[in-house]
Amino acid sequence: MLLVRDRRSAFPAGGITERGGSDRFLKSAAMEVTHYNVQVNAVTPDKIATEGVDELGTEDLRHMATSIPLRRLGSVDHIVNPSLFFASDEADFITGQTIIVDCG
Image (cartoon, rainbow, N blue to C red; front, top):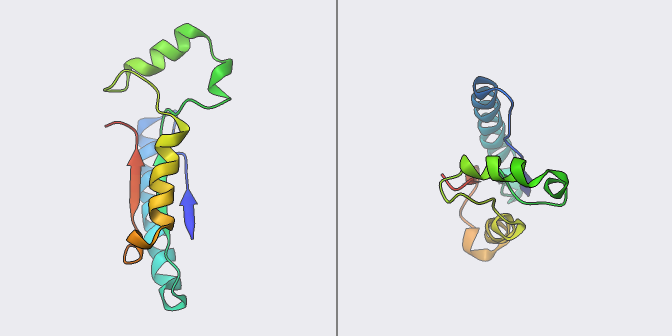
């Protein structure tokens, strides 16, 4: 099982609360289903260039990029690769974990 969640929040404190609740849910769900040989993991993206972002203007995109250490938005491939890892045999002993894809 793979959970994908977007962790963006308008308020930093809300994001922290949301993140903590999501982490507890993830670990709880992982423990609930381990006896079925099911793994529960998450990939949490932030500031990824998607079709919806294309509607923003150049200035908005530039402003978003300034809050990222590499000064650019991530791509969908940055989300696909960790997701494929969780779905692969290499992750067969990993459950209840999160890969945060936000460039820092």
